[in-house]
Length: 337
Ligand code: GDP
Image (tube, rainbow, N blue to C red; front, side):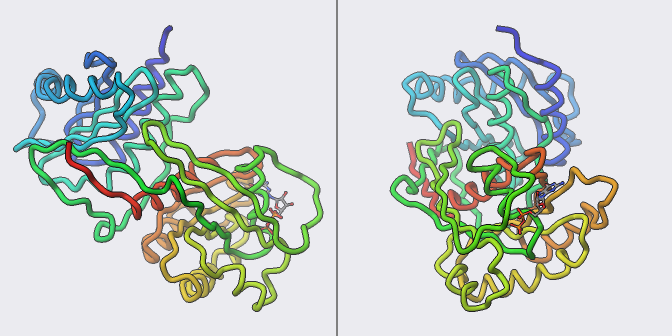
């Protein structure tokens, strides 16, 4: 089967931009540990032409170990440190492993969500499915997401979420597209003309990740049309583990009200994992809130940020996956091999 190499390269280029100077190299290797596509990073200390060659030699002994697990089906994700480099390995479908090589001083955690999303997209490219090579901008909280560094030890990451379902709520003004996002995610449909539902509809949807043994099961509560009633809202927001704050990029007032939504949600469900979403990006001409404004607010509130269109479906799955990743991180435990 021929793989769309241009797409793979575009994806790696994007990845390089997002990770920045700590990236030494990003490699896609096959099950046998052979490098299929590689990209040199922008780190100044590694400008030699043969860095990829050197890195593959370094990766090889680790890969031998990993590919063994890989073929037995038990491999998902791993990190590995040497004196000069840190490696992140992510399974990318049945064919490939995505390897990220970082400087030894780099934090693995902020890179982790990007590596996952990139691996997912690589898997899709190998499958010949359509995929946008753009990875959404993520903001991570370095303190809470720090995974302890263990030199010379391969770690397997597992999650405990198998038995759990997480209550997911949506915050934001009326008409920003909350219900549409949920419909797009749960049923992959966009209803152009429907009446606001009365009361709360509850839907279930699982988020699966390539290479992870567990799934994140969301129970999505959609409070269509009733958000103006404070009492209903409090019940709706209570005991939620996950939440999406949504605004409409074509209406400034929906953006301005987000901090209040944030405070209210946090006061009712303090331990909630939240992300910020700017929706309706298909309406390019009408846009009044810029990406930079969205990112700024996200940084201020310490949230990941992504832009979506429930109409075209752009980034909708990634938004929910981003949230699922945050949930996974909260339930992550590491196990030495
Ligand atoms: P909610 O009140 O926040 O749940 O918003 P709805 O999902 O009911 O959407 C409000 C209106 O915006 C509906 O007419 C939707 O069809 C429309 N809408 C939602 N998302 C998008 C989008 O991404 N692009 C466009 N063009 N319209 C959208």
